[in-house]
Length: 407
Image 1 (cartoon, one colour):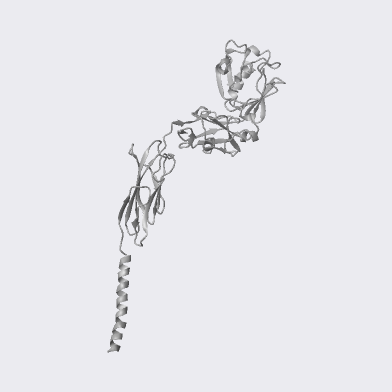
Image 2: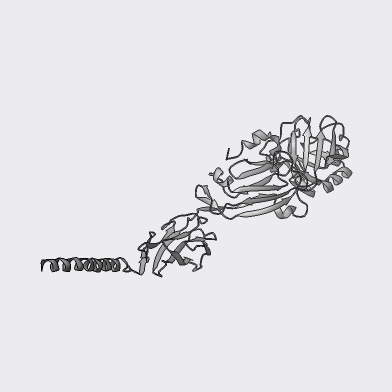
């Protein structure tokens, strides 16, 4: 009998162990909650068939005062995203976005608006089909002012003619820029063929770009300001992005020499005309250095009061002149002056302008235009200042590069 009891025990032990293992297996495979919802920025889990929780997260989580170009990113962990909706609460418009190939990430693909609130509603699922919902809210910054990237020369004004080889690219912002480095990082000039160039901040609102040497004739310049959403400082943000194209025409360079009282005109490096001139007299000498033509008109009223020398001052003048082309902002032009014809070629009698006779002035007007260069030597004047539109070429390349905010 003792032997039979021992056999009975030996047979019953494996059966009990097997029943316990089945119970444990069934417990491990029981499913969790299949419809979790979370209204915060942190993940809300569901439970997958392997026991890992599917979760959805939103970046930036409950973001406030973010830049409108900061993308909204929704991610799923231990599962995939089934749908994502981002909506402007005031306009009820839906923000466009794209899923990654594996549908674990959704990223907004268009900029948001300033001073706006957006709701985010996202759903994820695990491989067994269990789902989770995640909601969030994002608000964008409200600028006190928005700065526009105005361009000089206006691209439309030179679309047909192109610009000369001396033309700097200029962004003139409608409000001062405090964070110059942040703004400059978003500015670009792509030249074709490639040429080395750099930015120079003339002041808080004007930044110029010029190459190391004059532009090569035939160059195409693609100019961009990706400033929307960029913090300019002092509550100012970029108003909009802008991309424009300039084309550089043939090289036209005039070389005016105060010693010979002659001006030679070079077209693509070859002398095509020489003309007698009269430059600024001793009291009002013409500035030295490379000047760039910034404006032209067949007839123009020259009034020294426009740069601070008004009636009552012995240096004041006001006259109507023909075939005028501006070469600096303090009253220097190339133009016809019949009253100085007798002095042209032998003495300087002007208020700083380069005077020509009627025939030469008309020829000059019809052949040279915006961006073309007038180089002045031996005038007895001071160097054209870098801030005097356009005194960009007054600086050496090393000096010019130091004007970048990224140096």
